[in-house]
Image 1 (cartoon, rainbow, N blue to C red):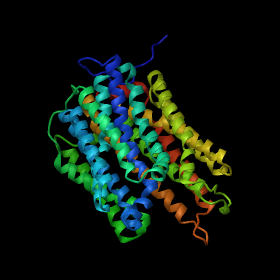
Image 2: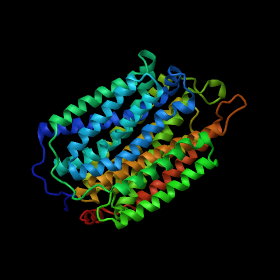
Image 3: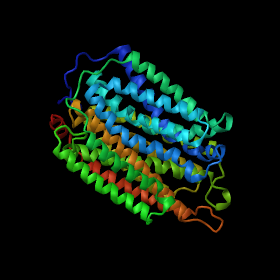
Image 4: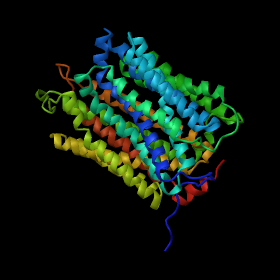
Length: 480
């Protein structure tokens, strides 16, 4: 009987952490990733409250979310690369310190401008996941590596769901400043734990930071994500939005040309031609789309008044509670994915997760008349996303060398961020584009959004089917 294949490449390491030391590393990294994920979504349900506190209009207040998104997207690849070059622990400490400073500034801010500045600093936390995965690969035994990487990746979804879940109760029982103080406390614990509980990684990439590439990539990401985030507000066919999309596309092309010519690229774009890598990035983008589309669709439908004929009249806090099954299945199936990955590689759980995700949106198309049906659809999508998140990130790690882990997983993180931004924008535009005479969303907007979610999930299924088998991933892992 053939033994179970080993998924992840086992690059030489000085000594794998075991027992209590391994538990400390996993706990600290889990807290660090949880803080980033919670900060990503926690503020969203309270934007109107913060805007009222500073007498700011909706357009100005929306920059609280937009600034965080842009900063995270720009800093993630740069900090991930610096971690590969100068030491993952060192850069993770810097990242957590910046994030902590950002939460304190936002919590104490006397005006909206400083809240937004604090959010920019918090965006550094976007690099937490790639740095964490690089540390895990360097310091933990291969027997648990795949599972731990999958769990850390899944925390991105779990934390985002928790953020939406607890935002209402925090604002109702305390004040909006606690939306920063509470995650700031988690960041502080993670920072102390990183400083004293994690050793520096042994693997280092040679070379120096590609400043030109970093600048051009930053321009590309900022323009594209700004267009996606503000498109519904400015108009998708407005000259401003179109100009940003075109500029972003041109900048991306220029970035690729630069990276192909420089000897020490910020991102080795040749990796993107590897089937095990680009398919995983597509899967990550699909999960991001589905996740944040669901975070808009489910609470919004639950909060709409019953007079609409399909709403349920729940409060913000009550609506958040119905996300618990989604968060629970996401967490559970991320662990299950880790076990499957160890046995059969990432392709099987990635395909299975994609099928479940497609099924969840198709079910929601025809079954959203009761709270139970909506909750079940959310639980199904959570199961699919848990399987996909763990499998996609493990597929990336299996196909790159240890020295490229930070940059490769940074791209995967950015792909998920972009997918989430597009999911939020698309669903928001569809719901906002179909309203009644009273200005309330129509049921058709939600049904259309569920259909779009199913179609996007099918794209994820195609990408999953194209993921190479384990043997191909193993041979590819010797690249670089």
